[in-house]
Length: 166
Image 1 (cartoon, rainbow, N blue to C red):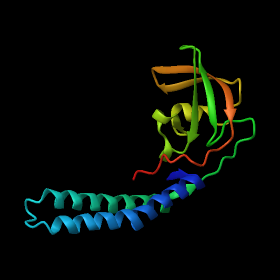
Image 2 (cartoon, rainbow, N blue to C red; image 1 turned 120 degrees about the horizontal axis):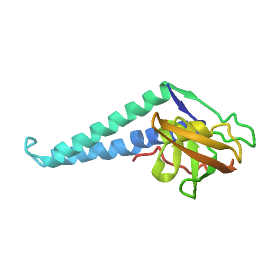
Image 3 (cartoon, helix red, strand yellow; image 1 turned 180 degrees about the vertical axis):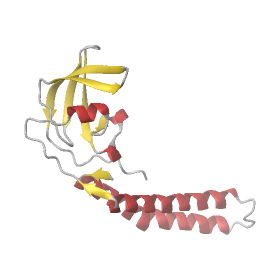
Image 4 (cartoon, one colour; image 1 turned 90 degrees about the vertical axis):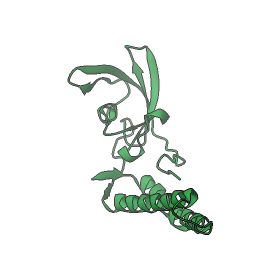
């Protein structure tokens, strides 16, 4: 069962609404225009438009199923602990570098943007920890690395749109 925050649910519902009310009409119009061009057997535009329309409908069904089968979670961490939707600055002694990550639900994980899932090895190890804690992150049986928590930022930014795909 997927875990979602209330913000995740809002963003998913926004995408569903957009895909139903705006994108669906555009996709249907594209199919209609391509169909009007004649012979459908060799009409690339028609096949591409149909494929796009079907992908949109599949995405709507996927998102609706996701909402139906998910559990709403909230950050339960104390003020001085790492929790869901917190930005955490960690120090990597091995590399002598600091990086900042935002801990998010798995649906929003995007390491390229610095969003790590609370289900990832690093994300799960950071949850509930405090500034100054030294952790050994076990990735698998043969590899682990050390981190030190340097800072926890509890402020939230509602503009994260990492779910939206349109």
